[in-house]
Amino acid sequence: MSFRRIRELRNYKKYITVWAMALTMAAASVPVSAAPKEGGRTEDIQEDIGQRETFQVRFDGAGGTVREAVRQMEAGELISEPETPVRDGYVFKGWSDQSGGQTGYWNFSADEMPEKDLTLTAVWEKEYTLDRSQVTVAVSAQAKVGVRESSSPRAVWKSGDERIATVDSSGNVRGKAAGRTYVQAVVGSQVVTAGVQVTNPYLSKSSGTVAKNRTAKIPIRGLSSTSQTSVSVSGSRAKAYIQDDQLVIYPKKKGITKFYVKIDGKQKTYKAEVTSYKAVKAIAKAKKAKGCRYSQPRRMRKGYYDCSSLIWRCYKPYGIHFGSRSYAPVAASEAKYMKRHKKVVSYKRVKAKKLLPGDVIFYSYTRNGRYRNISHVALYIGNGRIIHAANRRVGVVEAKYKYTKCIKMIARPAK
Image 1: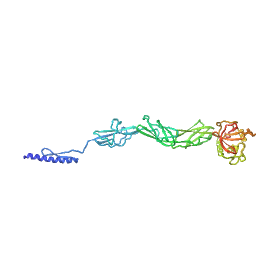
Image 2: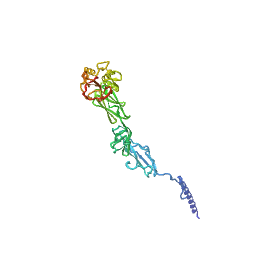
Image 3: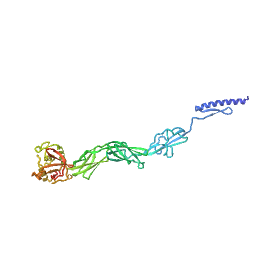
Image 4: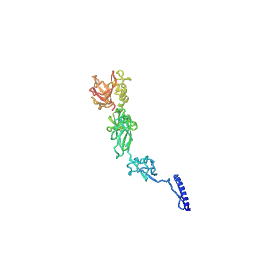
């Protein structure tokens, strides 16, 4: 065998050995060296088999704030979903790789990184809100709720509990029973909600006798902490306002004044029959006497009255004594005193609407030879009612005012 052939065989053996070592080192991702060259010399060969090509994924907030704008990813990897971006007045819907960000959302659990750079754009929807977050409405009253955005799609309304409140297709909420619930509006893909409080408000009384140029307070019941109230007056004869869940009135003229109170969309009316302060106090004493016994012999004793002593004892503490400071005159004498002091309103019957609370009504049921044959007297207390000491059978009672010919005089002791 020639010397040249022996040298070729030696070089070939070295090549096989180095090639086997290179395969082993490549599997461990380390550089491979010492590849043979002709003439028995070697040179280093460097190859980074672990280095792979990456691509850029960019997150475009489309007007919103994005915390991580760019990442480097390998093709075929799943992209972890970034933090939800924020944009005032808008609701984030998702990320899209489509032009304009309007169609198709990126599925972070399934979609893989392509072999190219990628831009994911935030998709936004205008945020819809209601014009109020809380609605307070009275039973049988109605309140309107609307979507603030004028260009919003048509809302589909729903009540959380129709036993408490209902809502129609226009957002009109109607109270059904006192309690709490909510209404929802589905606007596009959004659901917006408003709380509903239904109240059952009322005035503690719907009418009463009130003194001129004096403050009176009428409690309002059934309110909530979110109730809305307002008050108006018929004419300009009084002042009125709401304070501490009370209707506060200050009438300036005698007669009937109506106060209209609006509570959570529901109107209530208070009718005030305005008269003098002394008349109001006399009426209060007469009401306390209801149920007492009738007696002429004991007419000045505690717990007993006849018709004229009732009137005298109601007015006497307020300076009106009908001509006697120590003992009650009879009804005819009281009438005569009223005439002498120009307190007469009428010498015949009048309709109740022309009377004022505190007026004294004189009757004649028989000829007795006294002034105008007057034999009985009663106190008008307002609202078409009187209080009088009727007879031994019923005592002091409240009764309906009757438009009768038996009325011979009507006087107003406290003008």
